[in-house]
Each structure stands twice: as C-alpha cells, then as structure tokens.
Image (cartoon, rainbow over all chains, first blue to last red; front, side, top):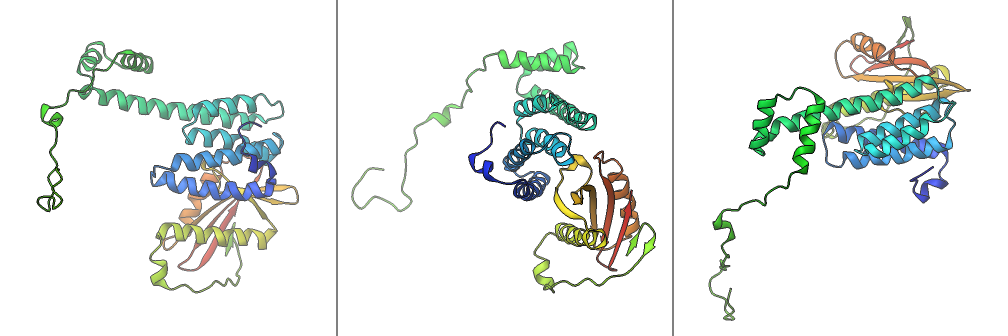
Length: 188
Length: 121
C-alpha cells in the first residue's frame, strides 16, 4: 500500500465502502457538469479505492472492483503515471481474475484513445498560434498519431518568443482619484 | 410491481415534501436518487440483499449488494413519466455488459404510476 493518508489506515472496509460510494457519486456529478474540481473528486475516489484494494484479496469480487476502480479513478483524476503504477502492481497479482485484468487494460486503452483525441484537437487548433508549424503540417500532411506526437515534441522543443505587447500597454499609468484632488495634498 | 413478468404489489410510504421545495432541486437527480432509494429497499425486502458499495460507471451497474456470500450487481433508473418497460429494456442491455462475477438485476422505478419494474439476468 502506497500513498494512503494516515487517517485512512484506521478505517474499516465497511467505512471505506461508505466513503467511496459517496465520493463516486460526487465525482460523477462534478464530471457531468464539467466542474473544475472534478479531478480532485476523482482523486479522492482513487485514495479510497487504493486503500480498499490493500484491504481486500484480488480474487474476491470487492477486491477486483477496488483494483479496477483505483486505476480508473486515477485516470479520471488526470494522474496517468499513478494509474500506470497501480495497474502494474495489480496486474502482477497472480490471483487477479482474467476478467479484472481485461478491465484494467481496457480502462488504460480507452484513456489512451481519449488522450489521443484531445491531442488531435490541440494539433488542429495550433495554426493560429504557430503559423510556421501549420505550414509544415499542411505540406507534410499529418494523418497518424505518430506524426502528431512528433510535431508536439517538435513544438515543445522550440523556444517560444516572448509575447510582444503593444506599446500603449507599457505606458505608465497615472492614477486619478475619482473623488477629485486629495484633501491631504498627496500626489496620486 | 413487475419482476420478470411476475406481478405483485406492496405498500410504500414516504414523507411528504412541498412541491415548491422539490422544484428547487434538479429534477433528473431527484428522480434518480429517489429511484435508487426505492430500488435498494426493494432488493432488500424481496431477497435480503444488503448494500456493499456504489460502483463506478465502467462496471455497467450502479451498486454491488451482498447476501450470504453471494453478490448482486444492481442497475437502477427512475422515470417521472414515460414507459418504464422501455427504460427497463435499456437498463437490461446495460447490465448485461457487466462482467463481474455476480447475479445481475435491473430495476426501473416509475413515480407517476407508481410502479417497480425489474428483471433478473
């Protein structure tokens, strides 16, 4: 068991079942409404699922659910590295059923597909930000994920020029009280 | 009640709420939460199932219930109006995808009739 908060160590499986049930509901509602703190809510789910996984056996139904749940909650929380570490550790358990293994692998694969979709979207938004790269995309034709990833690496490796602000923005601003001259004679 | 074609009836009581108060809440969520409450009570009264925990969506079921070492995956839906059997068909096909080593049950609570329609897989 790694990453568990000290207070969780004292909670029973029943108590954690209650907490994870509440947390899942909250996370799903926040995710549905695209609330900015949905990731934090999924992180909380991940913490409970991970602790439940530590308390249960992989071959039992609740144990299998907690293991898959920890991985999927980590992915939903945007913690891909953590999800991969958890998946790796659970998949190394001999007694985990083939169905649960498949569920973990399916979750990782679905997340990868979703991430690629996001990446493609970002690539096609780039022309306005990176005209020269857009030219190269047009000339070379980006059609595969591999090309897309290569271009992202290329773009990230390039130093970005400092933004050029209009000179009017850089003029010192003279503060002017809306209540007229300062009665104490202080300069604004 | 209609459970896999077997018809029955029961008395269900709940505390009266002012409609003005209820209208402050999201209608969809109130229906969903109410349906879950009724469905979980139904599963317990009908066959002694006890709630273990809520499931994440990828499991294709809402709840895991336990009864003397046996497991039940439960999928619940609620309707304020409309045909509950059409909804039950959707929920049935959803829970058919649940891959847990558990019995499976889909329940739809129709509040306008009111009725409970269920199907075990």
